[in-house]
Length: 117
Image (tube, rainbow, N blue to C red; front, side, top):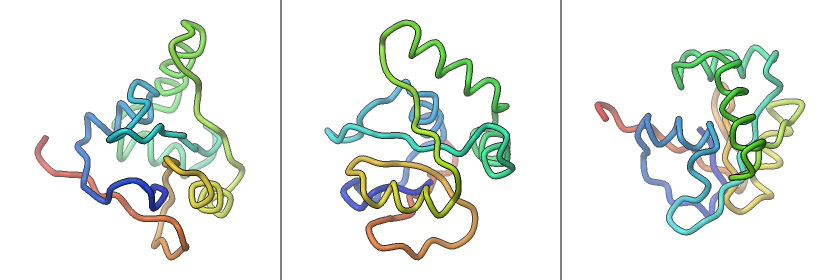
């Protein structure tokens, strides 16, 4: 997971990560989150969904639809590429997203996941 530099650099738990990307958790330590994702057909999105979150992309889409259609929140912002993901997260206070590979982009920090929770 990557985040705008305004967010704390603490590690987060897998349940918290799932809550963020399913749009159930809309703020983190007082900072309103803006979630950026790649298109659900993008290989990196599929890998993040399955390998990190442990869910299929269609399950994430269903969670987003519930939040949107119930009026309790908004869906994530879809971006075209990893480069756009880095740019948008770096320009958006409270922005979170994901990329594969090393991250060396001003204004973006990598948030690690705590094991065992």
